[in-house]
Image (cartoon, rainbow, N blue to C red; front, side, top):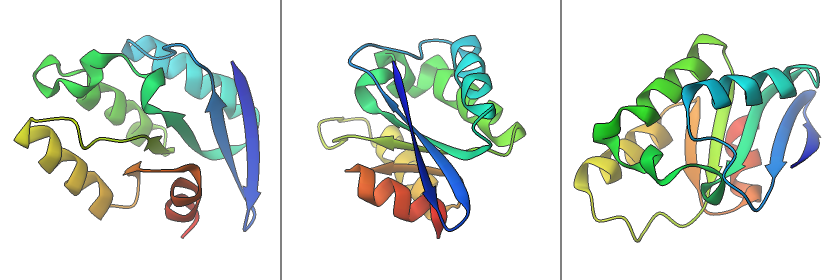
Length: 119
């Protein structure tokens, strides 16, 4: 796993680069936050491929628990990927609501992630 730091407008955003699933539990999300903490990061960018498929099954509760931890620690999170293949209307509504806010974003590319997180 590589951590790339983007410094934009005085903010450090850490991009997690990996081809493997890095987060499949709440504890793993906390460990990931702890690892970027030392970069004085205000946000993290992770790719859809780095999240367990269970994250996108809202009834599992994993997405809610993980986002709650990010909220509790005041860290923004952008998830980069193509979400159009999901059929769940609940998940689609969840993504729309997250994108309306200022802390969690589901976006198509790293440029959009960085723009959302620093505006």
